[in-house]
Every structure is written in C-alpha cells, then in structure tokens.
Image (cartoon, rainbow, N blue to C red):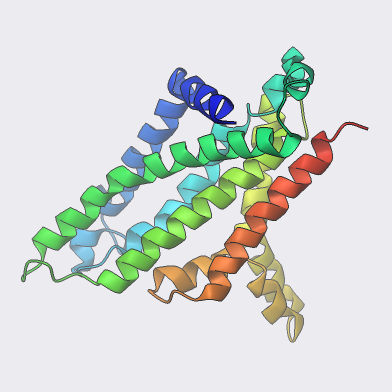
Length: 240
C-alpha cells in the first residue's frame, strides 16, 4: 500500500497536471481575494478576516480536484493495467485508499500555500494579530474536509469510465450537485423537505465550519461522504 501511495505521488508530481492545478488555484484565488475590486477583496472589505477567501475557494477547487483524480482508474482501465494491479497481494480497498490518500495529499499541499493570506491579514491589521481566529481555523478545517471529499468523489467518478475527460466531467457534476445542486433543489421543494435536503448539501456543512462553528455533526457528514464514495468505488471495481 505504501509503495502504491508513493507511486501515485510520483506520478502526480511527475506530470504537469498536478503543478498546473496548484498554480491555477493559487493564482485565481489570489486574484479574487486581493486584486479584483469589490466586496470580495479583503483590502476593500476592510475586515481582518479570510471569509471572502473561504467563500470563493470551494468554487475553484470543485473544478480542480476532478483533474487530480480523473486518471486514477480511467487510465488504468484504458491501458489494461488495472487487471494487473488487481493480481498484486493487495486488496481492492487498499488500492482505492492508496490512490485516494495520494490525491488528498496533493489537495492539502495545494491549500497550504494560502496560509500566506492568513499571515498577511494578521500583519495588516491596525493592531497586529487582530484577526478572527475561530473562523480562520474553522475555515481551513472546512476547506480541507471539503477538498478531500471532492477528491473521494473524483476517485469514484474515475472508476466509472475509461475516458479521462468523461471521468473529469462526472467528477465535476457530482461535486457541483452535492455541494450546490441539492441546495438549489431545496429552494423549489419547500417545507418540510427543504430542511433535510439542505442538510445533505456540502455547502451547509462547510458554511457552518467556516463560520467558526466546529460541530461533530459536520465532521461526521464529510467523513461519511468520503467513505461512501470510496465504498461505491470498490463496488464498481469489484470483479464479478
């Protein structure tokens, strides 16, 4: 399992896809938060808070992480190496989990450089250190959980097709639907179903975390969704 994990890390770092995805996230989030004028600009907003970053980042990551994961199993299926991998002394779940851990590791590395935003806001306040720490900690926790959930869903999407483009589009669709789509449906459904639909949305649980409210129910939601996606992946890949 460790060998497969390291192999996946090397394959990500050995291709331009991983570096490009990281660069796109850092540049685009930087432009939204620091450059483009308006209510999302931290300087224009005049608050010692990273709330605008946490509001913008999921929309970008929703597109990027399916690019991380689209090759996980789609490429293995296309080249025929999946059957060879299945014959190795390692379980299907260990194969899936190794690929998931490798992509999650890259996802966390993508987020970590944005800590420079925190340092900048920390230093820029009228009083140094005057920043909303609870919402910052909760926001980063929520962003990491959201990111690895996007990764798990992307891994599942990759198991459904031999074509990497189709795997990317499926991952993007699933991520969008569970993050935002369910909330849109809830608007039209009305009481009492709208409450339960909203609770199924990643957006609701992420918003709770980036407001600084760390509730075990939100943590359980993301962990459950991750393992559900990995279980579905195992179901798809399990030999008949």
